Amino acid sequence: MRWSSAEQSRGSTLERQRDDCRRHAADNGWRIVDELVDDGISAFKGQHASTGALGRFVADVEAGRYPEGIVLLCEKLDRLSRQEPGKVFLWMMNLTEAGVIVATVDGARRYSKGNFDMASIIEVVVKAQLSHEESEKKSQRLGAAWAAKRRRLNSGEKFVMTRRAPAWLDIVGSPPVFVPDPERAEIVRRIFEETVAGFGKNHIARNLNLEGVATFGRAEAWHASYVQKILRNPAVIGELHLARKARGGERTMTGDVIIDYYPVVVDADLHRRAMIAMKERSRVSTGRGRRLVNLFSGLARCDACSSKMAFRGKGRKQRADGSWVNEDYLVCDGYQRGRGCDNRTHYNYAVWESGILDPIIFEALHEDHSASQSEVRDLEIEIAQLERVWEVAETKADSALRIAIETGRPEAQVAWTELTVDVDEASNRLDHARERLLALKHTPSKEEQWERINVLRASLDAEDEEVRFEARSKVRSAVFALVTDLRFYGPETVGVTMTVGNEWSVHIDYNDLLGGTEWIRGKVEGGSIDPERDA
Image (tube, rainbow, N blue to C red; front, top):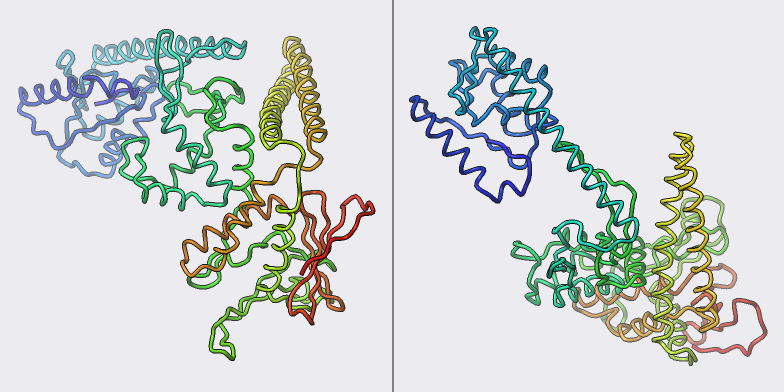
């Protein structure tokens, strides 16, 4: 029993074929030993014969599982194959030569070894030809219909291409339109916001389950894989990435992107920041219960040789007062590996973590930004949207150029010329928006990240592992968004330099008398300002 589309599986196709085959077997006194069902697999390309239930049956026959012979019963011959007549006939011959009797309910026909006379051969070939031609016509009609839809969308026409929609959207009205489900759309936004905040997909799924948030499908609980699927779905920012699927073949992306196809449920800037957070996120574990110990992994470098600063955990140490502390250090990897670096300093991690976070928190509380947060936020979203428009336009232009080079067709050259105009226009609009942002506010808006670090500071060393891990995840994400350069220098003078918010250069030194760090900041541009010192 076979059908070629998921839509058919929702109807009576299975029941009809099963009832007909069972009735026919009973009428002929055959005992049913197995039922082969290929759900949604096309016979046009012969996939089911190699990968489906039918393919497994043929393999069993070839392995000698049925030495006494067996009857393969189907509703019609085209349920077995819709390939070219020659392939169908050879497949039937090989199967019957192996001892299989192929029978059909339609016409009560039987094909077996030794009874393939001229009439039977002609019958099989003719039926196969008719089935193949029918499938070929369907494939061409469907391909043409989808191509027409893609052309309409590419021309700017707005319509619902298919009634399949992301789980957070409903299709209503006539003509149909997409409408976001408010509760589900809010969950999607929450997933992106928590990703930016530093949460991993496993923690997001866990929190949703703990709060009893309903899943989008039939699953009983949220899974990290589904959270990841939502994060990777371009439909959240309204994009439809077009694909092509030949009948019986695999789905392949065409490279065409329709930007405003779906309603936007996640703004472009939040989406961009989530993608960056996913790329930069790294869980560092050092022993049981000590996850994400080093907030600066991948960011901290040796000022002398530019090697990464390696984290070294020497275990727990008991102080004179009886308390226990973790003895952790940052050491130049170049020095450790004997690659010629002279910076042999072992930086006490706990001291320098606090010392590096201090000026970042000060920056958050000290600056009085003249531009309103809403103005900056709106412009950041606009820039992120324009970036996507430019990326899509450039991809289309590159594709047209490749086709023009490969084929030399004049229409492809014309298309490339027109698309380069779109690329230039998108680039100019993006540059103008970035200039407006600089004019509105001379530094990128980072208040959200700064405030997050300040609020979570007290939770960085919490006794509860989950509270500590979530706090450190958020702080690390914000540190990577704020700090563009972090260098450890020594050994004569021990300290750290870093660049914060693309504006401030901060120098942090260790003061033996204070038993801690002190820092001074200045403009990255090197302008003369009054230094500000704290300890």
